[in-house]
Length: 143
Image 1: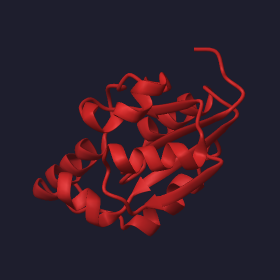
Image 2: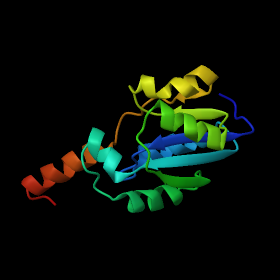
Image 3: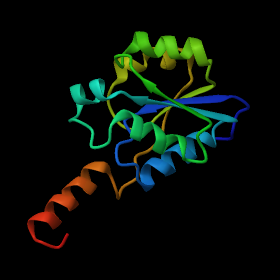
Image 4: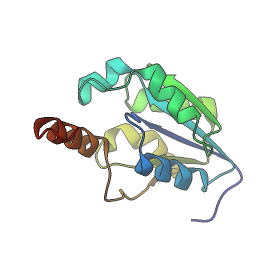
């Protein structure tokens, strides 16, 4: 997709930031002239995943340090269609980008506007795989 002259919005957990997170944010930023990233707060992440390894402030600092990110914030709202609608009203993005499957009901506001873009998941590294590798190496004494 050729870049637009406008803001791109995305959200995520971004725990243990790794190369696939960076690639996702680079690809999202290439769709517009600015990239704004909402980092889900610890309380919300704990509800749908597990407790994040890094707290919300550490995750925010990592996302802010990525050169393709123009602005990042901790999103304390429950991730749902109403909270996404509020973010769309605030930021007026030309694209809302998401990188994983599911959550379709949450994306209704951006689907309705025709600004929803789902980036394909890259095989390879993931936070879950990093954690599994650490556990395995602790168990077998190689860490």
